[in-house]
Picture 1 (tube, one colour):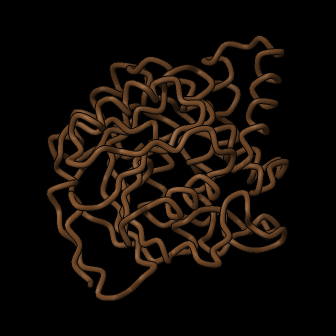
Picture 2 (cartoon, rainbow, N blue to C red):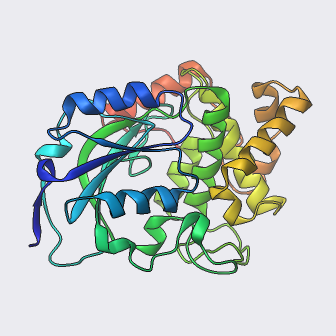
Length: 295
């Protein structure tokens, strides 16, 4: 079988410590044609997704991250064809709650159980090699439908953590592993646009400034200070320690962002952070399909 009706597949909701998880799970149950199964509290992203694969009663299955608000059943009405490629991942688009970007970050995905056979990513990545995310290790097919809203900025800590992780992941090479050599930051136009948006747009949203701050801090830690090892991206205890250090400093979010302007310039990225009105204007123009001024 190569064609799959997504509404006939097992659906797994993966949660760990997300404050809005219960609310998002209840919404998923309302729009999913099948009762969704919840995988909760498993430490390590690879372990959590592998648990879903192990417990799926259908050969392919769907995952929904706890940060995802699924507005309707659009995704579940789709049919996909993997052409017999057992490890192919189908990924829908997700709209970012903070900065308005629409791409695969935090999106609904469809996997094959067999894709996880022998796979080692995230916290199971071997030291000195391997992959730090699934999209570095598996073939992906991106689907045009926007299936969810990535609502990660539920509080300052989670906004900071997700901004930090995603900015670093967007900036590294696909073959980067925990022990990878730091090469000069070279970005495609698409990656540059996405990173520039993460570090500039979102002050119009609650806790959006913390997502901006996290994205900037991640880039500095990895590319300039080189204090970040890639395996720490998937160690949530690392972020708890990082957050405690931030709290001890007692500097407000705007102050932390202002401190990073010179470092962003060194990386060839926008030093300016847009205010709330400018952020809203950029996102509104993008939603209308109009030209967005260079960030």
